[in-house]
Image (cartoon, rainbow, N blue to C red):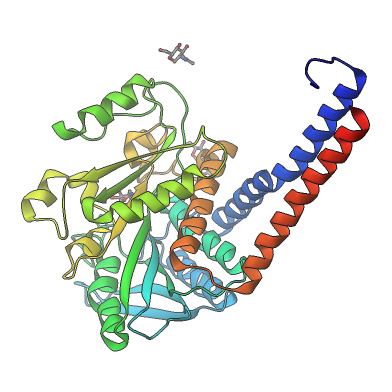
Length: 395
Ligand SMILES: *[C@@H]1O[C@H](CO)[C@@H](O)[C@H](O)[C@H]1NC(C)=O
Ligand SMILES: *[C@@H]1O[C@H](CO)[C@@H](O)[C@H](O)[C@H]1NC(C)=O
Ligand SMILES: CC(=O)N[C@H]1CO[C@H](CO)[C@@H](O)[C@@H]1O
């Protein structure tokens, strides 16, 4: 009706609707802006210099203490977990923060774990690798706390030390020492003493290098089984405009939950692509060797553990995309190159997706959250009412 009658009123009415819709949608955009701004500040101030235990010991320690105090500020139970390394002079330190759920310390509890490594190789500021994953984890923690609801399940935030292997000392020649210790010692003891289980782990590694230029994305998987995945990238002009997720068959529920959280957000130009390896449970030696790129992050020991835990690994494909082809493990993985608006917005989307995925899976059960939902419903009803009123006057 409105559209047939090109009246002045029709224009008013459309304007009112547009304004109402804009005010209603604003909060989503504000979330991105606020998240990106928090991430920028954190990376700039805390994660823009080298954090190798031998390369820059003071900054490595400062990063660790910053993570610890962030956990404390958010009222987590904090464990600074030290572990011996193959170098008797060097200790490793994981920083673990626990947000106990209502089911904490019971056999019904199923942990959700978010993990990122905080060290770098000796020669890089490590803004993308892996200041990005760590910042996303800490910002997701802030957002989860801001929801002010008590989760059914316990959520654990783990900052791993000594992921990186290229270093002047022989502390961790194989890499992934922090997450290995976390899984095989700390988590094992925790589960044995409580009888609790693990629902899923999200590993955030190098995740902020978004690049929309043609040919910015190299093909990074050469196994035949990925030919259609590769074709899809080529057909879209090989743009590095997606977050890359890896899981096994055994991780399909967790990956589906994360993808849903991602796809429910706005800004579809920031994409997600994931693969599902044809693996159930712990990968065999042959399977490990078949996918070297896909096994080389902190999810590895969650997969190989007995029992094997559900874990997904998220990255921006590291040295196979855009500027990271030159900057990986080097000088220019720095704040000037990485802290652009589009890279920060990409990181913000990953952060909000982690927040929403964890809050969904950990089951928020507080009346306050349903109060938030009611507020949303009331806002919507009010909006429809005003729309009706506006129609009445302007028809
Ligand atoms: C990217 O590739 C597409 C298709 O090949 C082409 O139409 C477009 O102009 C290219 N963009 C740039 C910026 O080169
Ligand atoms: C980061 O690296 C770029 C490229 O090498 C350089 O131009 C810039 O000055 C560096 N920024 C910082 C903060 O070191
Ligand atoms: C995805 C990923 O693991 N990114 C990098 C983080 O740091 C280590 C060590 O440099 C790299 O091997 C990872 O590939």
